Length: 458
Ligand SMILES: *Cc1c(COP(=O)(O)O)cnc(C)c1O
Image (cartoon, rainbow, N blue to C red; front, side, top):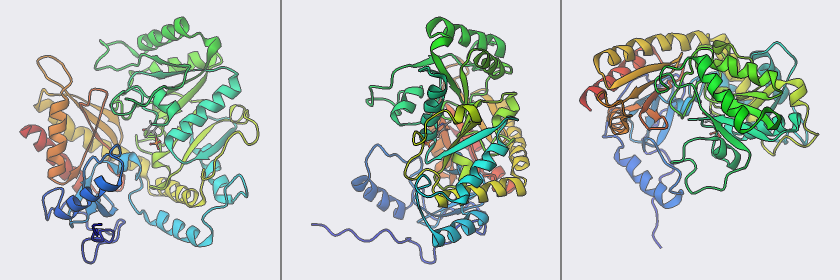
């Protein structure tokens, strides 16, 4: 039997605590990943299932503001926010304070056994903040996928119908139902079937790649497919991300989403917006739906909701939300009190600290710097997104083919230079920028310069 040296304690003496007080600098003291992270990656491979990957294999010891500090003492610029989660920043002060107080008071009762205020407070906040001037209800869950599943359950119960339409390039999660809704086979679905029945896929509006269809034309195409292949009489819900996340930050042409919603409303079909990635100030409004002129019947939220604690929600029209029987919705941990107080603290931070406006400022800088990159380099086919959710799509300028190899090279070079950078897209050729809204300008600009250099050198 071999004895493994203890690696669970931070490998650096006097490891920094997290939060906004961390030095806001990019600082590389070892190659990325450094020796301590490498050791831990070996240990990870022996302990953690291989299917659980890592975008950048540095082990974190602290994070806050716009940096992530690793076990070797490197300070990296964070352009990922743990996939759009830490909008308020990592270890945001209000979140830390609220969770610390709550953990000492009580950690769990199960809301469906003995309720508590913070769950109801979160529901009220969501009902207030989400688009739509009608009576609403909310239900809380643990993950984005779980909330998506529940939105579908609720829509089916309310309508008495079964079919669900999702779109090309969609990403809705990794549970069985949400794998079925998700478009991309590798790595999300491959080998994991069979998938749930009564899920259908409609064509999206993808301005760069659908031959210049207008929003209205793209909606007509999708609706025609739905009517011919499914029929509104069988369709419970249409679910769509206002801006697709994993699918490539695809912004549909103007008019596409309103036309879809109008059709759904007129045909007894529940219109569900999956705002798991776009929600909570990320796109420069509290919810992206506001910018596209849609008022979803149900809206699914998670990621940015609770400053990093696991929480998700379905919010929507009271008559739809109240349809399922008592006991039909819930779960052991859904709306855990630690996550609920974290959400209240995060929501207060978004509202009190002007983070909706901050997302727009970040967007201005992203578009300026990435726009210059696009103008200088024909391989950058497009800069798109809203607010602090922006991406570049890379292609071969001769053929117009997606360039996943180039994308991989750029991400690897950015990682080596100390920038946490995520890719996405059905064709693996999109680089996405999702900085925490707490990132200072100088880090944002420095990180974008690193990426520009990585593109130039690739
Ligand atoms: C991440 C994501 C999900 C799944 O959320 P999990 O918390 O990972 O289950 C669903 N929909 C969208 C749009 C997402 O970005």
